Image 1: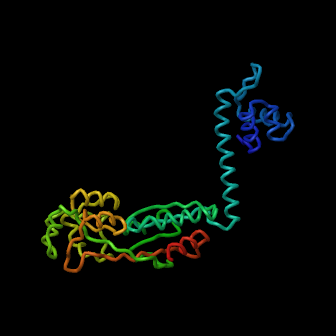
Image 2: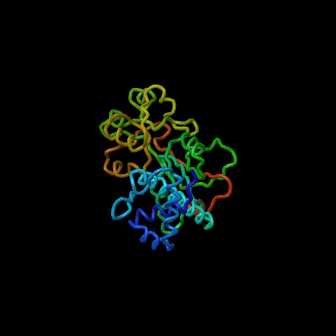
Image 3: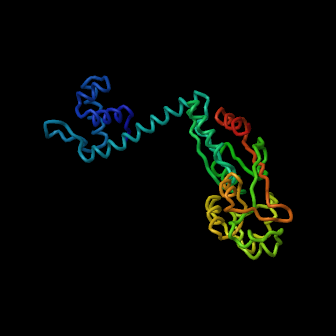
Length: 288
């Protein structure tokens, strides 16, 4: 069955207008042209699409079903037209960005806002993962950009340094480790639950990396990890931007380690090839 877009458009106009005459006016066509298109569609379908027994012609149940399929054809046509217009404008149709959950979300959302204010037709698709999962998702989703706190294993990527930020090894003020005023030993830490997101990575060089095999609990994201820390379930690394309020109030305390309880993250924005205008704007706004 070969249904043309013209037939689909005519059936949709009839359904919206309610009469053949009104559909003809909406399409700016002769009544006979509308009637011919619908009769031909009905003949191709081999079904009774119209109930002509009453005062006004109406769609049959079969006609309603064919209409739904015709409307999907028209939606696909509209999407294709919009995509071509976007491509002609020079903007990327879609900008896929994968970023590490430990990275502050605010600046990334500001980029989305800036693109919207610039009336960029690019649709931004944000995906979040952690550590090595960022690069895995970058590959799996064929993303153009990733923001990672780990050096990439992939070759041929262009890197731009982003502002560094700090994270601290913390516990709730009531946690036994927080009550110790001295530098904590490995034995101290091993006696309690280490909370992580996904698990550590040797490329981070965290002083707690060797503890994970013994007493680690992996959580889905940093907000869940923060909730677990605040509930006193364990200790773990949390970025300062996520716990500023809790640190200021003394609800969460930084633990003392011989090598220090602060880790500096140095995220990098990485992309392949020559970025489009949306990706360039993203780089410029995040790297400032």
